Image (cartoon, rainbow, N blue to C red; front, side, top):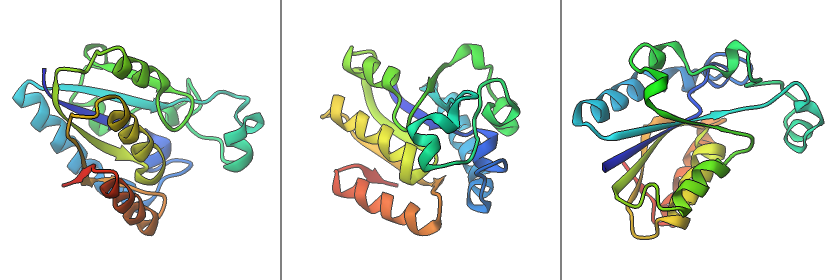
Length: 177
């Protein structure tokens, strides 16, 4: 298998949509470059997509973050155009997740789907919510596999929360590169 790249929630609503930030916009070229690097090396790449429905405001998350975003079937739910331009989505595993960490990805980690990965690198949005959640799943189920965060390919809700999340992951023996 070689290395594994996990591209977390690089969706329109997190980049320049409902919850977009200038920091998220700024990382898109680096994420595209990282995907190309892994493609050229023949390594595996998977994606997560934050996925909500019309009843979002009635959910616990919606009550705590009352901003409609990543509603399945909307433009904001889609992976950004710059990434869609370099991938064929049918060739990749894409986990649609209902919360911060992907339960299906966790199940695949638990079931040994990624046991042969020599390392796991995560990129994407938001460092302080979904990236950290999925990185911790990797550490939980693949305790001996090095996990990396490409810091210049991630952005948080704020620059401060991005930096805090990187420090927290580093304390959990996730390597920040």
